[in-house]
Every structure is written in structure tokens, then in C-alpha cells.
Image (cartoon, rainbow, N blue to C red; front, side, top):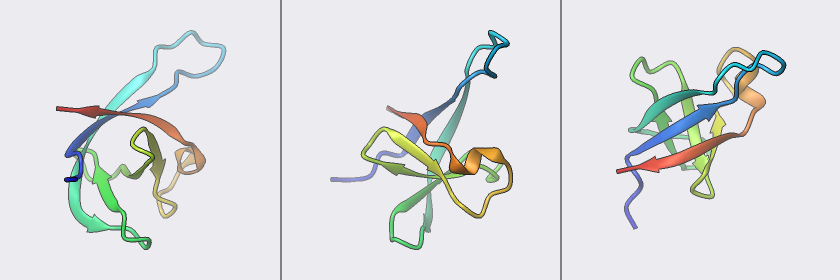
Length: 78
């Protein structure tokens, strides 16, 4: 089965602020991670994720910032 080419990744709003969630679109790249899984990136190429179980986005560990340990919701896009 071919890999899904695009996902919408949802970042939750900041707790206690009632801020809406933020959505980032990622696209399949030619890169693979250490485990051979495809790598997806946003348009800027700075946000990189693996998609696990078809719905869970895991930011790559070599990225700066607090998001690298989060599991985020991934929604496949046509």
C-alpha cells in the first residue's frame, strides 16, 4: 500500500488559555528515519515527524523545543 502523501497535524491549544488548536500540514519527503519509516515535513522543512499507526505523529527526536516528546494527532489528507 502506498504511503499517504499529506497529513494535518494538530497541536493542542495552550492549557488554561482557551486557545484553539493549531494545525500544520506535512508532506511526505524522500527521507527515512533510523527505523526506515518515512519522514514528513512542513513547508518550511523545520517540523519533521514520523506517522505511527496511521494517526499518531511523533516529532523526530533531533528537533529543538518541547514538541519533540509529544504524540500528536495526524489526520490523513487527500
